[in-house]
Image 1 (cartoon, rainbow, N blue to C red):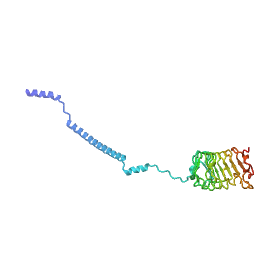
Image 2: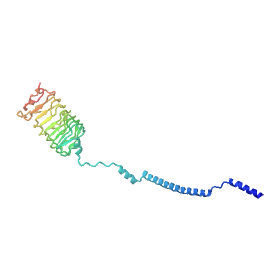
Image 3: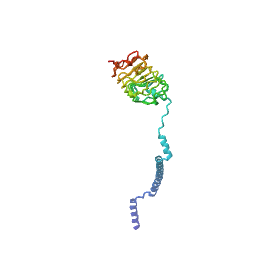
Image 4: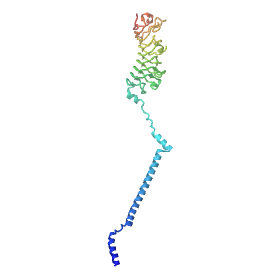
Length: 297
């Protein structure tokens, strides 16, 4: 009887007991899966660490280069100098007009004489802002025959600026700020320095004496107190109007000791606009074919 009761109780409670889950098998599967992921994770982490270590090393090498690398980078960073131009005259001939030995640099706002083609014979640099002329400006241009600097701001001309210009025939420095005259080349036929600020002390006694080809001399509208000395026999036209000339001598144009002397080449002398009264100096013009233009009373 007791055995029967025990059996009945066993059958009653057995259905209430749930079978245990296959923990060991599931745990093994999960563990195996987890292990594979862990190894992959370790591999990925190891790869990332090595990559980052390599990157850091590369960054260190870039940030702190050795001396040779630094010097190489420094050398590469230096801007190379521009190539030497084969034709140094090209910039001037782009700024100005170069035509058959003539260079026209008029009203181009330059403040110095530009480099000229070596074959240049004529330079017209009128109405610019040039303040000074130097010997270097024309050192390598020996064939110049005419220079025109009308309407600039020239105050100073270095000694020897025109010394190598043995062929120069015409020099125009009109409408500038000159206080004195430079040494002039010997073959000049025309010299024009009107409308400046030149005083008599700014002209040396022998400034014109050796200019045996000089025919035209324009020094009007300056501040001269007297007629320049030793004017050459070759002169045909002398313009000295509108200065401050107050005196004249018998030797200014003629020869006081030679009453037979005739200065027949002179065609025109202008002295109007000066304080001098020409009528008070009759012996100063006895060698001339024509009387100077000016005030006689």
